[in-house]
Amino acid sequence: MPSTVNAAFAVFLRDTVNLDPQVTKSARASRDWLAGQIHAFPETFDDFPALYTDKDIAFGSFARNTKIRELDDIDLMFCLRGNGATYTDYGEYIQVFAPKSTGPLHSYCNDNSDILNSRKIINKFVSCLEEVPNYQKADIKRTLEAATLRLTSYTWNFDIVPCFFTTPEWDGRTYYIIPDGQGNWKKTDPRKDRDAVTATNLLHDGNIFNPIRCIKFWNKRPVAPAIPSYLLETILITYYQSRVDPKAYSFADLEIPFLLIHIANSILGPVSDIKRIQGNLNNLALEEKIKINNRAEKDYLRALEAGKAESDGDHETSIRGWREVFGSSFPAYD
Image (tube, rainbow, N blue to C red; front, side):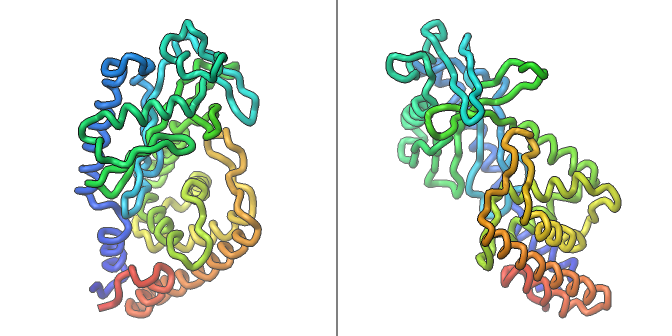
């Protein structure tokens, strides 16, 4: 057990918050093997749609390096070739039109229609994954937006999202179009999230990941309603985007008070989507927002007190204060 705050946070990050490097290595190898199997589907299954592998993209917190233990999911998007398919954006949803000239895509349209059904596409991924020898004992199913593959040999599952990549729209912008869970489609663009995280981390000399992961751990504690992961990450990245001076400190504990008070203030209002697609992400109920605000404010004050105790040389009191913020998983004073 540690006797200084810096040592306590080092142990906390290494053993409790951050992913085990060996798990990360194994997960990436498993991800790459899965991608290779899916890329072979058009040759293995006659009616599988053509793939546009150059536009495949990993998304989610594992891809953005903001994932914390235990690794539970890895998100992947596999791009299909449109082969002349078109789409119409109705605001609330998108319809993709795949006439017979698009080849195998047309077989996944609604009956007697050229409207491409995203559920049928996901179901095709599911049925093909079930034919892969290594996956025959896996739990494979369709969720709202993805084919989910859970392997018994790993702690994580793969969420496999079929998608299309658009040609430039009137403003020159391109999008990914993914299933909306209802059989239609919707726009997204994980490149925007990825680039925002990367650029913001560079702006702060590579120091934002550890405090963000600490706050994600804090959010998991069942002492108040949890903030949805993507909403929380957006709140934190937006904060660091707007903060230029001072840059993020290299010691995570110095960043925690800033983030907690920002959460307390931000959670009560709208939170804009970084991608500029979804609009306001904060759909929490007012009661939930108030509880999160109260918790964040209380822990902000605890974090300030812990920081003052450390400055005064009282590491035992400081570590005890951090245990009030993060719970018993935070190392005790030795």
